[in-house]
Image 1 (cartoon, rainbow, N blue to C red):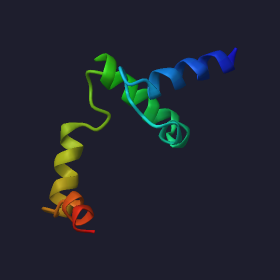
Image 2 (cartoon, one colour):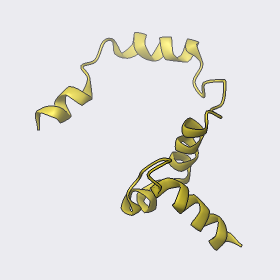
Image 3 (cartoon, rainbow, N blue to C red):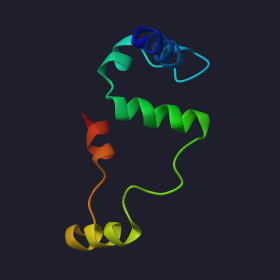
Length: 76
């Protein structure tokens, strides 16, 4: 049943030995975020990037260097 799968995912996400999310973080996460997090923890990440290197170069060329948003967030 779906409830069994959700329970298993919840236990994986909030366990201190695994992902260590809070319950609120688990319930706020999108399915994609959960899948990516589990893939990262288990080491089963896809080998290919969803964005090609060519496209990344095009984006960088179009937008130029940008300041880190992390630095802005840390100042608040």
